[in-house]
Length: 143
Image (tube, rainbow, N blue to C red; front, side):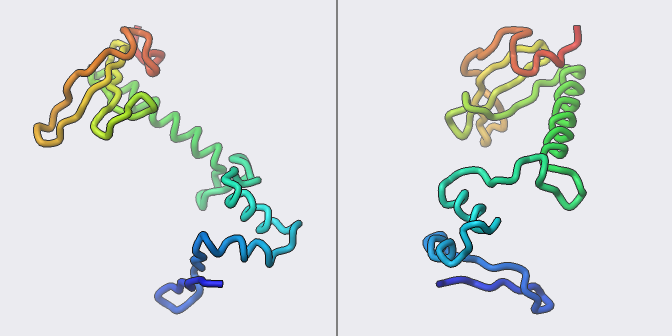
């Protein structure tokens, strides 16, 4: 099996890189009931790992679910603060098909599809996606 051993500056083993085409061979060499076998099988089948977000930990001690929750709260606060200052916020989602397209979330709760021109450093309106008070972030606007 082909693999590359990675070592840190001290010469200590820090990782192993196994080419994707070699993963089936590795899987055949593992016990069917081992956790690594199950994880590798999930990767090869394109499925999510058996561990869920409440089990996986970051080095900070937070679970993935706790980290996502905190990140969502920080994001909501950033959007709320911008809207209170009268500033729009820009993001991408499944409605932004082109690399230059963004959703502009406006302080009135509306949303527009816009295109960013890096040469001019400006956005151009393409179409309205949601009227005032009906956009994704509209629950953050001040009454």
